[in-house]
Length: 413
Ligand code: C5P
Image (tube, rainbow, N blue to C red):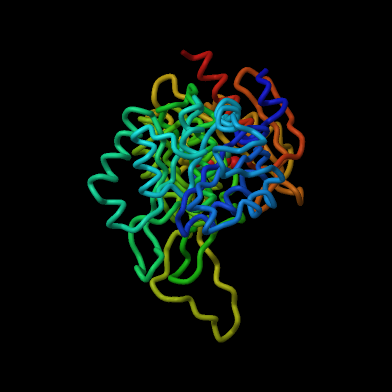
Protein backbone atom coordinates (compact mmCIF):
# COMPACT_ATOMS: atom_id res chain seq x y z
CA UNK A 1 0.00 0.00 0.00
CA UNK A 2 1.50 3.37 -0.96
CA UNK A 3 2.03 6.03 1.68
CA UNK A 4 0.24 8.54 -0.56
CA UNK A 5 -2.88 6.43 -0.11
CA UNK A 6 -2.67 6.74 3.66
CA UNK A 7 -1.81 10.41 3.52
CA UNK A 8 -2.66 11.98 0.20
CA UNK A 9 -0.56 15.10 -0.18
CA UNK A 10 -0.60 17.82 -2.70
CA UNK A 11 2.85 18.30 -4.18
CA UNK A 12 3.12 21.76 -2.60
CA UNK A 13 2.44 20.68 0.97
CA UNK A 14 5.41 21.30 3.29
CA UNK A 15 7.71 22.20 0.38
CA UNK A 16 10.07 25.17 0.26
CA UNK A 17 9.38 27.50 -2.65
CA UNK A 18 11.68 30.43 -3.42
CA UNK A 19 9.46 32.89 -5.24
CA UNK A 20 11.59 35.28 -7.29
CA UNK A 21 9.82 38.51 -8.24
CA UNK A 22 11.31 40.89 -10.80
CA UNK A 23 10.43 44.42 -11.90
CA UNK A 24 7.30 44.15 -13.99
CA UNK A 25 3.85 45.60 -13.43
CA UNK A 26 2.74 41.95 -13.15
CA UNK A 27 4.61 41.86 -9.79
CA UNK A 28 1.33 42.63 -8.04
CA UNK A 29 0.00 39.26 -9.21
CA UNK A 30 2.97 37.56 -7.52
CA UNK A 31 1.39 38.44 -4.17
CA UNK A 32 -1.69 36.40 -5.12
CA UNK A 33 0.62 33.59 -6.26
CA UNK A 34 2.46 33.67 -2.90
CA UNK A 35 -0.86 33.50 -1.12
CA UNK A 36 -2.10 30.59 -3.21
CA UNK A 37 1.11 28.60 -2.73
CA UNK A 38 0.93 29.27 1.02
CA UNK A 39 -2.69 28.13 1.15
CA UNK A 40 -1.59 24.89 -0.55
CA UNK A 41 0.82 24.27 2.32
CA UNK A 42 4.07 25.56 0.77
CA UNK A 43 6.62 27.60 2.70
CA UNK A 44 7.22 30.55 0.42
CA UNK A 45 10.34 32.72 0.64
CA UNK A 46 9.90 35.75 -1.59
CA UNK A 47 13.05 37.23 -3.13
CA UNK A 48 12.45 40.57 -4.80
CA UNK A 49 14.77 42.40 -7.14
CA UNK A 50 15.13 46.13 -6.52
CA UNK A 51 12.95 46.70 -9.59
CA UNK A 52 10.22 44.50 -8.14
CA UNK A 53 10.29 46.38 -4.84
CA UNK A 54 9.38 49.57 -6.76
CA UNK A 55 6.13 47.89 -7.82
CA UNK A 56 5.26 45.95 -4.70
CA UNK A 57 6.50 45.94 -1.14
CA UNK A 58 8.35 43.01 0.51
CA UNK A 59 5.84 43.55 3.32
CA UNK A 60 3.01 42.44 1.02
CA UNK A 61 4.71 39.06 0.68
CA UNK A 62 5.45 38.79 4.39
CA UNK A 63 1.78 39.49 5.04
CA UNK A 64 0.55 36.58 2.92
CA UNK A 65 3.35 34.05 3.51
CA UNK A 66 4.01 34.65 7.21
CA UNK A 67 7.73 34.44 6.37
CA UNK A 68 10.38 37.06 5.81
CA UNK A 69 10.99 38.25 2.26
CA UNK A 70 14.31 39.59 1.02
CA UNK A 71 15.84 41.92 -1.52
CA UNK A 72 19.40 42.66 -0.35
CA UNK A 73 22.34 40.46 -1.32
CA UNK A 74 24.71 42.17 1.07
CA UNK A 75 23.02 42.12 4.42
CA UNK A 76 24.73 42.33 7.79
CA UNK A 77 22.26 39.92 9.42
CA UNK A 78 22.78 37.12 6.91
CA UNK A 79 25.59 37.42 4.39
CA UNK A 80 25.01 33.92 2.98
CA UNK A 81 21.25 34.14 2.54
CA UNK A 82 21.52 33.24 -1.16
CA UNK A 83 23.29 29.99 -0.24
CA UNK A 84 20.75 28.89 2.38
CA UNK A 85 17.81 29.90 0.16
CA UNK A 86 19.32 28.01 -2.77
CA UNK A 87 20.16 24.87 -0.80
CA UNK A 88 16.87 24.66 1.06
CA UNK A 89 14.62 25.35 -1.94
CA UNK A 90 12.58 22.48 -3.36
CA UNK A 91 11.75 24.68 -6.33
CA UNK A 92 12.51 28.21 -7.48
CA UNK A 93 9.75 30.02 -9.34
CA UNK A 94 10.40 33.42 -10.87
CA UNK A 95 7.13 35.21 -11.57
CA UNK A 96 7.08 37.67 -13.20
CA UNK A 97 10.36 37.20 -15.09
CA UNK A 98 11.41 40.33 -16.99
CA UNK A 99 13.57 40.46 -20.15
CA UNK A 100 16.44 41.82 -18.06
CA UNK A 101 16.19 39.01 -15.51
CA UNK A 102 16.02 36.40 -18.31
CA UNK A 103 19.11 37.93 -19.91
CA UNK A 104 21.06 37.98 -16.64
CA UNK A 105 20.04 34.42 -15.75
CA UNK A 106 21.06 33.09 -19.17
CA UNK A 107 24.49 34.70 -18.78
CA UNK A 108 24.92 33.25 -15.29
CA UNK A 109 25.18 36.75 -13.79
CA UNK A 110 25.20 36.88 -10.00
CA UNK A 111 24.59 40.54 -9.32
CA UNK A 112 21.63 40.39 -6.94
CA UNK A 113 20.06 38.09 -4.35
CA UNK A 114 17.82 36.32 -6.91
CA UNK A 115 20.50 35.49 -9.49
CA UNK A 116 22.99 34.35 -6.81
CA UNK A 117 20.28 32.11 -5.34
CA UNK A 118 19.72 30.62 -8.80
CA UNK A 119 23.40 29.72 -9.07
CA UNK A 120 23.42 28.30 -5.55
CA UNK A 121 20.43 26.01 -6.05
CA UNK A 122 20.11 22.64 -7.71
CA UNK A 123 16.31 22.66 -7.37
CA UNK A 124 14.15 22.86 -10.50
CA UNK A 125 13.50 26.37 -11.75
CA UNK A 126 10.24 27.62 -13.26
CA UNK A 127 10.19 31.03 -14.89
CA UNK A 128 7.10 32.94 -15.97
CA UNK A 129 7.93 35.68 -18.47
CA UNK A 130 5.92 38.91 -18.46
CA UNK A 131 6.69 41.74 -20.84
CA UNK A 132 5.66 43.74 -23.88
CA UNK A 133 5.08 41.61 -27.01
CA UNK A 134 8.00 43.11 -28.95
CA UNK A 135 10.37 42.61 -26.04
CA UNK A 136 9.24 38.99 -25.66
CA UNK A 137 9.48 38.13 -29.37
CA UNK A 138 12.84 39.97 -29.76
CA UNK A 139 15.41 37.46 -31.06
CA UNK A 140 17.73 38.24 -28.13
CA UNK A 141 15.04 37.40 -25.55
CA UNK A 142 14.14 34.24 -27.47
CA UNK A 143 17.81 33.20 -27.63
CA UNK A 144 18.16 33.78 -23.88
CA UNK A 145 15.04 31.73 -23.13
CA UNK A 146 16.18 28.89 -25.40
CA UNK A 147 19.51 28.85 -23.57
CA UNK A 148 17.74 28.60 -20.20
CA UNK A 149 15.60 25.71 -21.47
CA UNK A 150 18.21 23.79 -23.46
CA UNK A 151 21.27 24.18 -21.25
CA UNK A 152 19.93 24.77 -17.76
CA UNK A 153 16.67 22.74 -18.00
CA UNK A 154 14.64 25.69 -16.76
CA UNK A 155 10.91 25.27 -17.24
CA UNK A 156 9.30 28.23 -18.93
CA UNK A 157 5.61 28.70 -18.19
CA UNK A 158 3.81 31.13 -20.47
CA UNK A 159 3.57 33.93 -21.33
CA UNK A 160 -0.08 33.98 -22.27
CA UNK A 161 -2.06 36.22 -24.55
CA UNK A 162 -4.20 38.88 -22.92
CA UNK A 163 -4.41 42.43 -21.69
CA UNK A 164 -1.00 44.08 -21.36
CA UNK A 165 0.07 47.24 -19.56
CA UNK A 166 0.76 50.68 -21.00
CA UNK A 167 -1.98 51.05 -23.54
CA UNK A 168 -1.41 47.83 -25.48
CA UNK A 169 -4.79 46.28 -25.22
CA UNK A 170 -4.07 42.72 -26.07
CA UNK A 171 -1.07 40.64 -26.97
CA UNK A 172 1.48 37.95 -26.17
CA UNK A 173 3.49 38.65 -23.05
CA UNK A 174 1.01 38.41 -20.20
CA UNK A 175 2.14 36.53 -17.11
CA UNK A 176 0.15 33.34 -16.55
CA UNK A 177 -2.50 33.43 -13.83
CA UNK A 178 -1.43 32.21 -10.35
CA UNK A 179 -3.81 29.20 -10.75
CA UNK A 180 -1.85 28.17 -13.85
CA UNK A 181 1.61 28.84 -12.39
CA UNK A 182 0.94 26.61 -9.37
CA UNK A 183 0.36 23.69 -11.76
CA UNK A 184 3.80 24.18 -13.34
CA UNK A 185 5.36 24.54 -9.87
CA UNK A 186 3.50 21.39 -8.75
CA UNK A 187 4.82 19.49 -11.75
CA UNK A 188 8.37 20.64 -11.01
CA UNK A 189 7.97 19.55 -7.37
CA UNK A 190 6.68 16.10 -8.34
CA UNK A 191 9.57 15.53 -10.75
CA UNK A 192 9.79 12.53 -13.08
CA UNK A 193 7.31 9.70 -12.43
CA UNK A 194 6.13 6.51 -14.10
CA UNK A 195 3.51 8.65 -15.81
CA UNK A 196 6.04 11.04 -17.36
CA UNK A 197 5.35 11.24 -21.10
CA UNK A 198 2.62 8.60 -20.81
CA UNK A 199 -0.69 9.25 -22.55
CA UNK A 200 -3.65 9.60 -20.21
CA UNK A 201 -7.29 9.80 -21.27
CA UNK A 202 -9.89 11.16 -18.84
CA UNK A 203 -13.62 11.54 -19.47
CA UNK A 204 -15.54 14.01 -17.32
CA UNK A 205 -18.81 15.80 -16.79
CA UNK A 206 -22.31 14.96 -17.92
CA UNK A 207 -23.54 14.56 -21.48
CA UNK A 208 -26.43 16.58 -22.87
CA UNK A 209 -28.94 14.82 -25.10
CA UNK A 210 -31.16 17.21 -27.03
CA UNK A 211 -34.94 17.01 -26.91
CA UNK A 212 -35.48 20.10 -29.07
CA UNK A 213 -33.36 23.22 -29.85
CA UNK A 214 -33.66 24.51 -26.27
CA UNK A 215 -34.13 21.47 -24.02
CA UNK A 216 -31.98 18.48 -23.17
CA UNK A 217 -31.73 15.42 -20.93
CA UNK A 218 -28.68 15.51 -18.66
CA UNK A 219 -27.55 14.90 -15.07
CA UNK A 220 -25.97 16.71 -12.14
CA UNK A 221 -22.32 15.83 -12.81
CA UNK A 222 -20.11 18.92 -12.28
CA UNK A 223 -16.99 17.47 -13.92
CA UNK A 224 -14.90 18.30 -10.81
CA UNK A 225 -13.71 14.73 -10.18
CA UNK A 226 -12.51 14.18 -13.77
CA UNK A 227 -10.88 17.61 -13.97
CA UNK A 228 -9.02 16.97 -10.69
CA UNK A 229 -7.77 13.61 -12.01
CA UNK A 230 -6.62 15.18 -15.28
CA UNK A 231 -4.74 17.90 -13.41
CA UNK A 232 -3.08 15.40 -11.03
CA UNK A 233 -1.97 13.29 -14.03
CA UNK A 234 -0.55 16.42 -15.69
CA UNK A 235 1.50 17.16 -12.56
CA UNK A 236 2.90 13.64 -12.76
CA UNK A 237 4.22 14.48 -16.22
CA UNK A 238 1.54 12.79 -18.35
CA UNK A 239 0.28 14.10 -21.63
CA UNK A 240 -3.42 14.33 -20.84
CA UNK A 241 -6.46 14.45 -23.09
CA UNK A 242 -9.59 15.38 -21.17
CA UNK A 243 -12.84 14.67 -22.98
CA UNK A 244 -15.58 16.55 -21.20
CA UNK A 245 -19.28 17.16 -21.51
CA UNK A 246 -20.60 20.68 -20.76
CA UNK A 247 -19.34 21.92 -17.36
CA UNK A 248 -18.95 25.29 -15.64
CA UNK A 249 -15.25 24.85 -14.84
CA UNK A 250 -12.30 26.85 -16.22
CA UNK A 251 -10.23 25.11 -18.92
CA UNK A 252 -7.47 23.30 -17.01
CA UNK A 253 -3.87 24.36 -17.55
CA UNK A 254 -1.55 22.18 -19.65
CA UNK A 255 -4.26 19.72 -20.66
CA UNK A 256 -5.70 19.03 -24.09
CA UNK A 257 -9.41 19.61 -23.56
CA UNK A 258 -11.92 18.17 -26.03
CA UNK A 259 -15.41 19.56 -25.45
CA UNK A 260 -18.35 17.35 -26.40
CA UNK A 261 -22.07 17.47 -25.80
CA UNK A 262 -23.56 14.04 -26.41
CA UNK A 263 -22.66 10.44 -25.58
CA UNK A 264 -22.22 9.78 -29.30
CA UNK A 265 -19.69 12.63 -29.58
CA UNK A 266 -17.90 11.34 -26.50
CA UNK A 267 -17.73 7.88 -28.08
CA UNK A 268 -16.12 9.30 -31.25
CA UNK A 269 -13.46 11.18 -29.25
CA UNK A 270 -12.74 8.25 -26.92
CA UNK A 271 -12.54 5.80 -29.86
CA UNK A 272 -9.86 8.02 -31.36
CA UNK A 273 -7.66 8.23 -28.25
CA UNK A 274 -8.23 5.02 -26.28
CA UNK A 275 -6.00 2.89 -28.57
CA UNK A 276 -3.08 5.23 -27.78
CA UNK A 277 -3.79 5.79 -24.07
CA UNK A 278 -1.56 4.11 -21.48
CA UNK A 279 -4.13 5.01 -18.83
CA UNK A 280 -7.86 5.73 -19.26
CA UNK A 281 -10.03 7.06 -16.47
CA UNK A 282 -13.76 7.18 -17.18
CA UNK A 283 -15.17 9.71 -14.76
CA UNK A 284 -17.91 11.03 -17.07
CA UNK A 285 -21.56 10.52 -16.17
CA UNK A 286 -22.68 9.51 -19.63
CA UNK A 287 -26.45 9.63 -20.22
CA UNK A 288 -27.65 6.08 -20.65
CA UNK A 289 -30.56 7.19 -22.84
CA UNK A 290 -31.29 9.90 -25.38
CA UNK A 291 -34.50 11.09 -27.03
CA UNK A 292 -35.19 8.98 -30.11
CA UNK A 293 -36.04 12.02 -32.20
CA UNK A 294 -34.78 15.58 -31.74
CA UNK A 295 -37.58 18.01 -32.53
CA UNK A 296 -36.39 20.63 -35.02
CA UNK A 297 -38.55 23.31 -33.36
CA UNK A 298 -39.17 24.13 -29.73
CA UNK A 299 -41.97 21.92 -28.44
CA UNK A 300 -44.91 24.13 -27.53
CA UNK A 301 -47.18 23.66 -24.55
CA UNK A 302 -50.31 22.01 -25.89
CA UNK A 303 -53.63 23.82 -25.54
CA UNK A 304 -55.11 20.96 -23.55
CA UNK A 305 -52.00 20.84 -21.28
CA UNK A 306 -51.34 17.17 -22.07
CA UNK A 307 -47.72 16.32 -21.24
CA UNK A 308 -45.69 15.02 -24.18
CA UNK A 309 -44.20 11.53 -23.91
CA UNK A 310 -40.47 11.37 -24.39
CA UNK A 311 -39.51 8.37 -26.47
CA UNK A 312 -36.00 7.36 -25.38
CA UNK A 313 -33.41 5.02 -26.85
CA UNK A 314 -30.20 3.58 -25.41
CA UNK A 315 -26.97 5.52 -25.84
CA UNK A 316 -23.73 3.77 -26.71
CA UNK A 317 -21.69 2.62 -23.72
CA UNK A 318 -18.45 4.52 -24.27
CA UNK A 319 -16.34 2.09 -22.22
CA UNK A 320 -17.81 -1.14 -23.58
CA UNK A 321 -17.86 0.00 -27.20
CA UNK A 322 -14.15 0.86 -27.13
CA UNK A 323 -13.03 -2.06 -24.95
CA UNK A 324 -11.58 -4.04 -27.87
CA UNK A 325 -9.49 -1.02 -28.96
CA UNK A 326 -7.75 -0.39 -25.66
CA UNK A 327 -3.96 -0.36 -25.73
CA UNK A 328 -2.23 -3.53 -24.62
CA UNK A 329 -1.18 -3.40 -20.93
CA UNK A 330 -3.09 -0.15 -20.49
CA UNK A 331 -4.70 0.71 -17.15
CA UNK A 332 -8.43 1.38 -17.16
CA UNK A 333 -10.35 2.93 -14.30
CA UNK A 334 -14.11 3.37 -14.04
CA UNK A 335 -16.55 5.21 -11.83
CA UNK A 336 -19.92 4.09 -10.56
CA UNK A 337 -22.46 6.29 -8.86
CA UNK A 338 -25.27 4.30 -7.28
CA UNK A 339 -28.28 4.94 -5.12
CA UNK A 340 -28.47 1.44 -3.60
CA UNK A 341 -26.48 -1.82 -3.33
CA UNK A 342 -23.41 0.26 -4.15
CA UNK A 343 -20.72 -2.38 -3.81
CA UNK A 344 -22.67 -5.18 -5.53
CA UNK A 345 -23.52 -2.98 -8.52
CA UNK A 346 -19.99 -1.63 -8.69
CA UNK A 347 -18.54 -5.17 -8.62
CA UNK A 348 -20.73 -6.14 -11.56
CA UNK A 349 -19.56 -3.07 -13.58
CA UNK A 350 -15.92 -3.69 -12.69
CA UNK A 351 -16.14 -7.15 -14.23
CA UNK A 352 -18.36 -6.36 -17.21
CA UNK A 353 -16.35 -3.30 -18.28
CA UNK A 354 -13.00 -4.97 -17.43
CA UNK A 355 -11.61 -2.15 -15.29
CA UNK A 356 -8.43 -2.52 -13.25
CA UNK A 357 -10.29 -0.75 -10.51
CA UNK A 358 -13.52 1.07 -10.04
CA UNK A 359 -14.31 4.10 -7.89
CA UNK A 360 -17.75 3.66 -6.34
CA UNK A 361 -19.76 6.31 -4.57
CA UNK A 362 -23.29 6.99 -3.48
CA UNK A 363 -25.64 9.46 -5.14
CA UNK A 364 -27.71 9.92 -1.98
CA UNK A 365 -25.16 11.64 0.31
CA UNK A 366 -25.12 15.43 0.57
CA UNK A 367 -21.35 15.76 0.98
CA UNK A 368 -20.31 13.27 -1.71
CA UNK A 369 -20.99 12.44 -5.35
CA UNK A 370 -22.46 14.97 -7.76
CA UNK A 371 -21.95 18.71 -7.66
CA UNK A 372 -19.98 19.05 -4.40
CA UNK A 373 -16.27 19.60 -3.65
CA UNK A 374 -15.92 16.46 -1.52
CA UNK A 375 -16.36 12.76 -2.09
CA UNK A 376 -16.51 9.54 -0.07
CA UNK A 377 -15.57 6.62 -2.26
CA UNK A 378 -14.70 2.95 -2.16
CA UNK A 379 -12.12 1.48 -4.54
CA UNK A 380 -12.85 -1.99 -5.88
CA UNK A 381 -9.96 -3.78 -7.54
CA UNK A 382 -10.03 -6.59 -10.09
CA UNK A 383 -9.23 -9.58 -7.89
CA UNK A 384 -11.65 -8.59 -5.14
CA UNK A 385 -9.76 -6.11 -2.94
CA UNK A 386 -11.88 -3.24 -1.65
CA UNK A 387 -10.69 -0.05 0.07
CA UNK A 388 -13.13 2.38 1.62
CA UNK A 389 -11.79 5.94 1.86
CA UNK A 390 -12.96 8.58 4.34
CA UNK A 391 -14.60 11.85 3.24
CA UNK A 392 -11.99 13.80 1.24
CA UNK A 393 -11.81 16.69 -1.20
CA UNK A 394 -12.07 15.59 -4.82
CA UNK A 395 -8.46 16.77 -5.22
CA UNK A 396 -7.32 14.39 -2.48
CA UNK A 397 -9.39 11.55 -3.97
CA UNK A 398 -7.68 12.19 -7.31
CA UNK A 399 -4.25 11.95 -5.64
CA UNK A 400 -5.22 8.57 -4.17
CA UNK A 401 -6.51 7.34 -7.54
CA UNK A 402 -3.27 8.43 -9.23
CA UNK A 403 -1.16 6.74 -6.55
CA UNK A 404 -2.97 3.45 -7.31
CA UNK A 405 -2.48 3.96 -11.03
CA UNK A 406 1.27 4.45 -10.41
CA UNK A 407 1.34 1.23 -8.35
CA UNK A 408 -0.37 -0.70 -11.15
CA UNK A 409 2.01 0.77 -13.73
CA UNK A 410 4.97 -0.31 -11.61
CA UNK A 411 3.69 -3.87 -11.42
CA UNK A 412 2.95 -3.98 -15.12
CA UNK A 413 6.42 -2.90 -16.33
O1 C5P B 1 -23.39 4.63 -15.90
P1 C5P B 1 -22.59 3.54 -15.24
O2 C5P B 1 -22.76 3.53 -13.76
O3 C5P B 1 -22.75 2.22 -15.90
O4 C5P B 1 -21.06 3.96 -15.46
C1 C5P B 1 -19.99 3.09 -15.17
C2 C5P B 1 -18.78 3.49 -15.96
O5 C5P B 1 -19.05 3.41 -17.37
C3 C5P B 1 -18.30 4.91 -15.73
O6 C5P B 1 -16.89 4.87 -15.70
C4 C5P B 1 -18.84 5.69 -16.92
O7 C5P B 1 -18.00 6.78 -17.26
C5 C5P B 1 -18.88 4.64 -18.02
N1 C5P B 1 -20.00 4.80 -18.96
C6 C5P B 1 -19.76 4.95 -20.30
N2 C5P B 1 -20.80 5.04 -21.20
C7 C5P B 1 -22.08 4.99 -20.78
C8 C5P B 1 -22.34 4.82 -19.41
C9 C5P B 1 -21.30 4.73 -18.53
O8 C5P B 1 -18.60 5.03 -20.67
N3 C5P B 1 -23.06 5.09 -21.67
